[in-house]
Length: 347
Length: 228
Image (cartoon, rainbow over all chains, first blue to last red; front, side, top):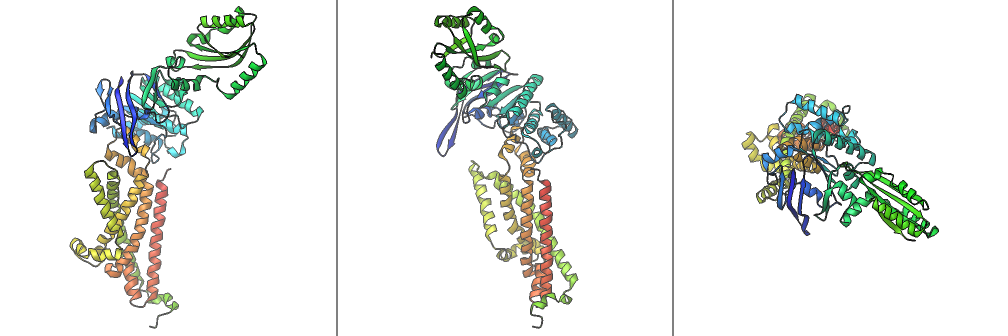
């Protein structure tokens, strides 16, 4: 288990003090995928880099499995670092080394024979799907392939923890998905604790069990991904979640909504939000059967699986036409079925 | 004198070719030996400058300041003055003040600081993220030097030593003028002082050929190690 206790970090710069991290406390369970989300400069990298001593806290304690690690130095620090793999936004591979030589780098730091190093690096290259590119140089690889090398290198010393520092931020969506899939596979196969730093909410949704949201060095919200996605508390969290699951604010939707309201003044535009098992139930059909006089047209819908497998989250935009009283009844019915409803505009 | 005029350049009958080859050989080994010493010293000094730069430890800052100061001073002294300045030192170290051997200390003292600066620039160009990644994997400072800094800056280190070697060839010629031997001395004493322009031309052609070979070999190796 990883514990951050009341961590603060202050940098002295020419412009004065910068409070990068302010009184952050956080627990990450072993085997968990923990996402830390926030805009750049929120302090998430600074916080997580304390795990392998790339940063040291100004105050507070960092513990891994009950052992203080923020005060380690020299040989002890290096031994600790070998138990933590890290992947980076810009991959940070050595251009002077081939794929297999890059993967062998951390193994050279541990006392392994050359034969063992080769065997292990080869296995890892195959695990990440680069078994046929062993002797290519990074310059000959695509971004996704480079990150695969980065992942293999990070896993070389059988770490307990893998830190992913914006590892997919420099990749296109397709490649991002492939890398996330690989990380998911690794998490399940190796029972590794993964700490993900990102500003992309879909990375959290795809992979994480728990999430913490940081803003201006402070931790403003944390919890299981399913909870944070379905009931975000803070304004920033809502923005992050909505950017991912809510398409209602796109100009297209707004335009069409406005047109419909003008055309059908007695109709109502309603957003329905389904969580968990409700996404799999035919709730809308039941509503139509219950209120056969209502007319419904579907404007937009989306559904997202949440990473911790506790369910999914779906949104649906519909227009209901009919008697005002009956529409009211229909909304009550939906609420009874535990579907969140929100009238967008009464017209 | 009778052999003045442009035609004098081409009176190759006046050239004692075995002397030219002996002189070329002297120039070559003076250059190669000093390049080897300069490479080692320059990389060590460059690493020292790189590692001590921007440190918060006052003692390390003083060290950086001292090394920087000496590097700058010796880089600023014109070579011909440096040789004369170092004559007593050369006498003590080598036991002589003429001959190819005696040229080595001043060649090294003038070129090593120059190369040290090139090494420092090359090291500064190594991607900071890669160095951070190596530390994050548990590498020690020495492992970072051997496994990251030097391999990742190798093309710049090699092109730097090529440039240094070529200026060293120039310096050996200057040293030759005051008795170090080699093509410089040949051109100066057998050519200039003996009014034998053909020998000066022959020495020039040979020295240019040596420079070209160094540049060519340096370029090839730089290209070969650069996998970016």
